Length: 383
Image 1 (tube, rainbow, N blue to C red):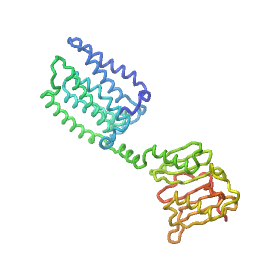
Image 2: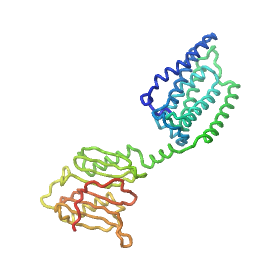
Image 3: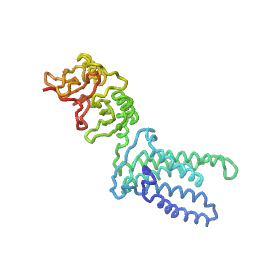
C-alpha cells in the first residue's frame, strides 16, 4: 500500500497538504460553531488525510490499466517481515488512536478500520492508481488499528475526562461494535473474491526465496568458495543474477586479479574456474622440477572429489598431456549410458606444480546451462 517512498510518488506532499486543508478546515469550523474544542477533530481529520493521500495517490504507474487482481499475501505473520507491512501497521496507529479519543467507541472504531482499509484495497484493485491490492495490507492496517485502539483505550483510562476512571468499552458500543465487525468482515470476505481475481504472488515469491536461501547466505557461500579456489588475497568484483531462461537457478560469477569463478545457486555447483596463467598459490613453494604424472592426477582427482563427489563417482576418466601446453595436464570425466556417451562433461586442468588451473563443466546433473561459456581456460585436448 505504501510501498513507494515520499520521493517515489510525485506530488505526495503537496497533495497531502491540499487534502488536509480540504478536510480539516471545514471540520474545525463546524466544530467551533457548535462551541466545542476543534483540536481532536482537526487532528483526526489530519491523520485521515494522511492515510487517504498515501494509499490512494496515483503512483508512477498511475496511467496504466487496473489489473483487477488482489494478492492473497503471506501466511500467518510472515508478512510482518517486510518493510512495507511495517509501514502499513504504523500508518493506522495514530488514526485509530485519535478516533478512540474523539468518538469514544473503540469497537465501532475497529469496525470502521476494517471497512476503511478494505475500501482502500478495493480501490487499488479496481482503479488505475498504479497500486497493488493485497490482503497483507488489510492485515497490517487492521493490526495497526488494534494497536492504536489499545493505546487510545489506555489513554482514556489513565487520563479520564471528568476525573472518574471508567471502562472505555460500554455495553452499547460492544454490542453494536461486534455486530459491525462481523458484518464488515463478512462483506469483505464476499466482495473481494467476487470482484477481484485473487492471486498468490507474494506467497509464491516467498516460497521461491525460501527455496533459494537467503541472499546473504548465497553471498557468504560464494565468497568462501572464491577464497578456497583463488586465495584470500584475490581482489575483484562479484556479479549475481538470475538468467531469463532459468526458473530454478541463480548465476554467480567472480572476476578477480587471480582468476575467475562461476557457480550456481541454490544447488551450489561449481561450473567454471580460470586462474591467472601458472601463478602459484601464495606461500606455495616453487618446485625445482615437474611433479610425476601420478601426483598430478591425484591432485586433480582430489579436486574432483571435493567439488563433484556424485558426478564423478561412476564416471569414466581420461588423463592427457595437452600438446599446446606442456606445463599442464588435463583430467576429463565422462558419463556413459548403456555404452553411449552422455553430454555430461568435467574437464580439470592441473599445472605441473600440482595446482588446479582451470575447470569447465557441461550438463551436470540437476543443473542447466544458464550462460554462454567464456574463453576456455582449459587447453584443448590432443587430437
